[in-house]
Image 1 (cartoon, rainbow, N blue to C red):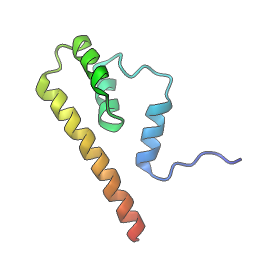
Image 2: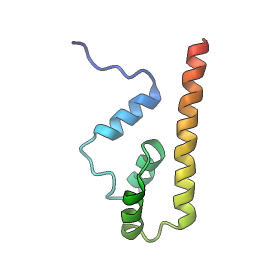
Image 3: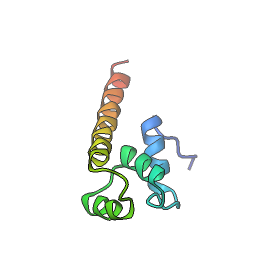
Image 4: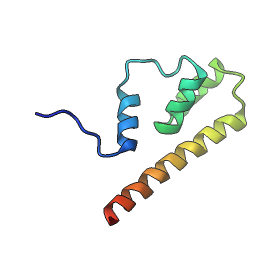
Length: 84
């Protein structure tokens, strides 16, 4: 079997973050990157809110919006590639 080749940049980043051994909940920067690309579930967000009280409710809403934007970009990119 050959080496794994992601189909696009979205899959590459998602796979990297989903399979890393690094705990992405240890620092706010990692929390943000993981949240935009993979997304956090509600129980995890509740835990992270306790862990990072300086992240405002507005920031959490923005993170959720950015994650939705990521998913939309991924969908649009996939459609674009199909149409080429």
